[in-house]
Image (tube, rainbow, N blue to C red):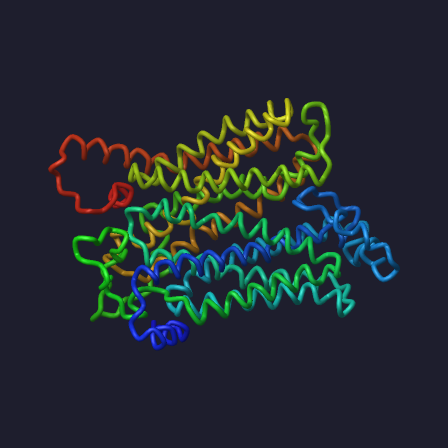
Length: 509
C-alpha cells in the first residue's frame, strides 16, 4: 500500500521551513476526522427533516425542528408544491415509500461497510475517505436535484439514497483506522469517547442546516450539506496524514525520551522491511473478541437507532404531566438523549481506560440500560423534570457502549496481538463490527414501526431484551477480564507485558 505525504502538509513544511511536529499531526488528525464524520452524519439527517415536506401527512415525529416552523411564510403560489407534497411521496402510500428509502439506505450502508473496511486495509485511507465524502456529497445533492428537474420517479430517489449509503459506508472504517494509527492505548478510550461526539454534532448541525434551507426549497436542504461534505473531503485530501510513516515521523523528535508517554507510542511496531499482508475478511472475524463485540453492537445500535428515529414521536404522543407536547417541543426535548449519549461515550471511554477492561465497561452499561429503559417508560410521563432526567440517563447508558465499541474496542481489536504486529487489519475489523451493528440499526426502527402501532410497552420490552442480549454476548470476555485482573493482583510480579488487560485476555482460546 503506497501512501504519499499530503500536498497541504508539504506546502506547510515548505513555508515553515521545518517538519511538522508529531503533536501537531495528532491534533490535525483529530480535527479532520471529527469534521469528516460530523459531515457524514449531517448529510444523513437531511431526509428526516424533509420528510414532512415530501409527504405533508407524515407525522413521524423524528424532526428536531419541524418544518412548519420554517414554512409559515411560504404561502405563495410558487411554493404550493411544498404544502401539497412531492410525488410520489404525497400519495396514499407515501409514508411507506419514505420508510423503504430509509431501509434501503441503511441496508446498503451496512453491506457496504464490510467491503469498505476490507478495501481500507489495502489502499490509501486518505484517498478512500476523500472519494467516500465527495461521492456522498454528489448523491446527496442529486437527491435534492429531483426538485429542480421535476423528477417524480420513486426509483430515482431510491437509487440516489442507495448510492449515498454506499459511499457513506467508507467513512467510519477509515476515520477509526486513521485515529487508531496516531494514538496509543493508554488513553484511547477517553480520547475516542470525546472524539465520538461528532455523531451528535453532525446530527444537530445537519438538522439545523436542512431546516433553515427549507424556505428556499427542499432541494437546498440536500444540496448545501452535500456541498459542505465535498469541501471537507477536499480538505482531507490536502491535509490528512493517515499514519506517522506517511510524513516520515517514526517517533516524536520534538519530545525528549523522558517526556514521552504511551500516547506518543505507535499502536503497532511497524515492519519496515517485510511487506505486510492485508488481513482477510474471514481471518478478521476469527480475531478473538471480534465476533462477540460485533454481535453486541448489533443489539446496541438496534436500541440506539430506535431512539434516534422514534423518540420525538413517542414524546409527542405521550402525556407528560398530563399534557401533550407539540411536535416542536418534543423534537427539542429529544435532543437531550443525544447530549446524554455524548456524556456516556466520554464516561465509558474514561472508565474503560481506568479499569483496562473494555468488555466489563460495555457490559455494565448495557445491563444498567435495562432498568433505565423500564423507569423511563413507567415514570417518564410523571412530569417534565422526570422525563428530562430519565431520558438523559437512558441516553448515557444506551450510547455509552455503542460509542466505546465502535471506537476504542474496534481500534484495540484491529491492532490485536494475534496479528503479530500487522497494521493492516484495523479498517477491516472496524467495518465488521460497525457493519454488523448497522444491520441492527436498520432492524430496530423497522420493527418499532410495526410494534408501536399495537403497544409502546411492547417496544420497550423489545429494547430491554436487546440490551440484555447485548450484555450476555460479552459474558465470556467479562469473565476473562475479571480473572485476569484477579490473577494480576495475586501475582504482581508476573510478567504479562505492557498490553492492557482487555487486550491480553482476548488471546485465550
